[in-house]
Length: 169
Image 1 (cartoon, rainbow, N blue to C red):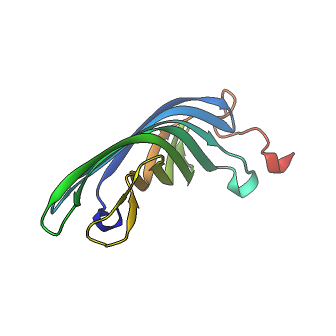
Image 2: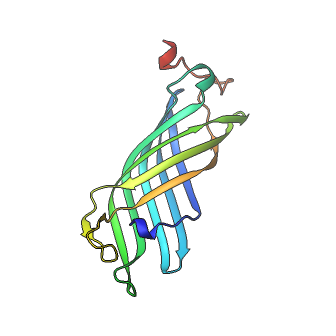
């Protein structure tokens, strides 16, 4: 619900495997939590994630990310001006993201990133604080940060060399 959006700390973990020097698959879990004036707000997303490095040259380390999975959110909401209730939603979820790998020391990378998670399929309900407003019971998490990756995309002895990109064919 737009009236109950809060920002707070998030964290995630991914474990996976390289499919090629330009792509990886993984299991990805992201968690967000925030204590709010009306109760705690929490979200958890688990997705099967694909990461692709489709560009070459200066953009060789730019990655795009997408995934499908399940998201759960638990949020306090005002049902009247004085009544607070909790909405718990668990629905299918979608992840989209992008980032850039910066080499530290083979095979360690720093990766600034942005991800957007969202559930879909939540039921619609009419808000009581905003007459006539229709809102959806879905969870959304915007997640930005810097991650530390252990990733060896290239051949043995050269962990930074990727195969030619789609734009280099």
